[in-house]
Length: 352
Ligand code: IPM
Ligand code: MN
Image (cartoon, rainbow, N blue to C red):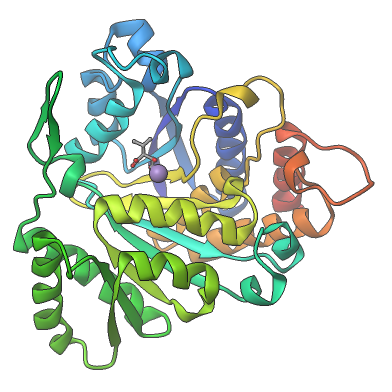
């Protein structure tokens, strides 16, 4: 297959993990005879420094002309500590989601047996947890009408029926391919927007009788997720709840550095780690490249190249088993491995 990939490395540890992501992508392409063409483009704080815009038109164009975007991370502390700054790196990420129409953010939560002890939760709770959080990504409070004045501010959690319906259908598609259990997470006991979600879901669910649909308030869901994560198969929820719940869910796997994601919708899909730019880790060769590498697996799978995805997952599992791990998940003893060494080991495994 011929693939044009836009490469958006962004800020902080972004370029380092991206280097490994691209190396793995290329190794798999070589092994399976795919022709991958990369086009680098700037975004985030780096793009603000260069052109004053965290998602420049040129980058948008590159994304639109590509088959997929491989994205790493954006963010820089110099903006976090300055609430007055007019332009922020995160706006670039939001602009990309909106302009590419990426309404469905797929965040799989899987556990690796050899890492369950890294989770702050008890092994017997975490072991075997395997679910997907489908987060609506272009609506709700992130994008609704806002006001920000000196003494008053608001965000609006605006959703239309059409927006709710299309994301629910994505949820059902995944549920049908998995354990056929869909949990709609909302706050319908308080929020009007959530009651719309629930009304639409109660209509749509009739079209999917094979799937067990249940409804859970977000406060309850956040508790259930750490009490009994195996309860979940597919979660569908609005933008803000999905943002919060997926950070919480990352604790189940033991490291944020393990979670990949796919964002799909109207235009070019984007594949990116769930974690951020971790500026403190920048340049130290300690960032875990696995979330980026697993995002490459999701990219291949998106195009139906399942064997390619499987090989990447196998290689990742093998690296963990061999204790070829970055410091935050390394088992006691053994040689030390950094971002580059883990990436290189996985590339070798793939080309073996
Ligand atoms: C995420 C991030 C972003 C979000 C930030 C960086 C804007 O936390 O992808 O989860 O809130 O969506
Ligand atoms: Mn988040």
